[in-house]
Image (cartoon, rainbow, N blue to C red; front, side, top):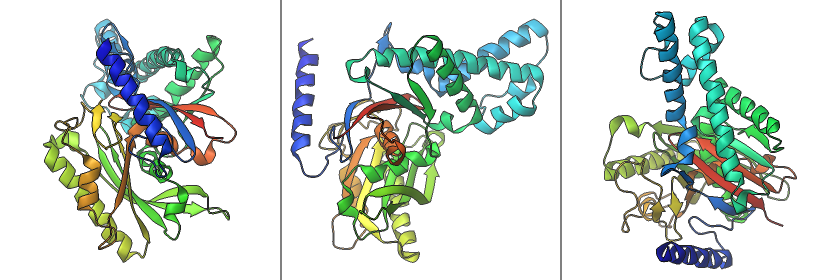
Length: 363
């Protein structure tokens, strides 16, 4: 208990210091437009993470449960569901045009998953920082599919039935791009004045993405719209690389995007924004929560922002600024241009894990 208390005190002191800095640090609680009141909350129930009940693996397990039940009772093989890796496109095809029994299996899994997602949301709303939440965006890979949309819609109905007036929305941008787009809001817009775009990286438990994010400003020079002009993805989970290889390949992709930008006369700011799983310390180290990444990313001497800053020269002879935050935080920031008058909002990202972040708009 004493150890946990000392960690909390250290984190709060770190956040107070971060709030006094003119430029956001890694994992900052104070960003130009929002306060990050909570992120990477690790709720447990019976020694298991609550979020594991509503991630991609959990949905796949529900599909398998219902498939076995139907096959056992009907003595028929559901060939459409009889392979290990069901992707989003295949599931959509089954729902729309597949065998009725197979479609029924997918729909049953969606209903069960929505029930679980509703339960998980209720647990988050019990947390002090989440109590005023008006709106939750659902992001991550699963949200970018019809299956994900149906699950969110069903979860919304369940919450209303439980007398919870909270609004659920699927994240507005393609979830594969939202994790890049949000990087534009990790630093004040004035540092990007005179530039067309920034570099961004989105690191997940399955994929790593790198991209060029275009910045579009209002007449007051406020960034009001962002767009991914170019990106590349590497499914590292398939290759099972060591940490050094993973970092080298990420840096290589960023360097190629620098070359692409020069070729297409895109003025890149000397800045890279990174979204990465886990609790991010002020110095760029990862405190915890990076267990799905290749190798030990929580080692004290490992510092991804420093390696990226050293390895990626946007402008020859000038240092490249790098800001890293939790990947759910960055994905949530992509909604800032569309948040309207909502003051308390959050994001849940359904992927290899279940990412989470809670925001409050700054006055």
